[in-house]
Length: 109
Image 1: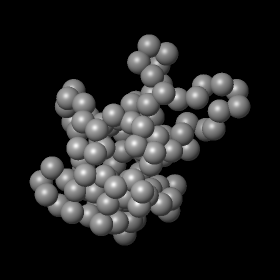
Image 2: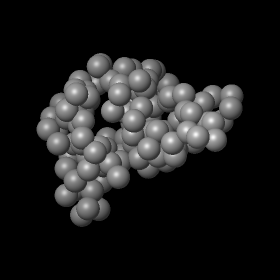
Image 3: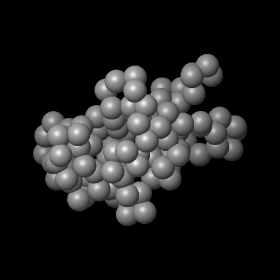
Image 4: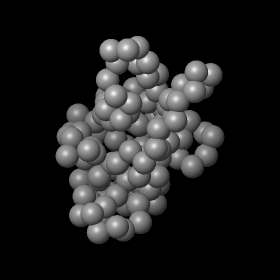
């Protein structure tokens, strides 16, 4: 499972069909859920084992009830719904809007 969303890196690389794949999810009661996403320029780059174009981190409030969806699904939903705050390799928080995301184009692949 992954999501394709247009992504413009801080270096100016414009990936129209950037392939966003959850790399890790860490949950603590104190800090909530932290997700690490590897971003590849295309799905093919991921499948060929290329190095990610970028790695992003974001946090969101996970549903931890017995009936909540699995954590990977929740992670992708948070990313595609633009509910998350993003930090690109630093403690400074950035919104997806700042990162030039257009989540209306998001699609699961």
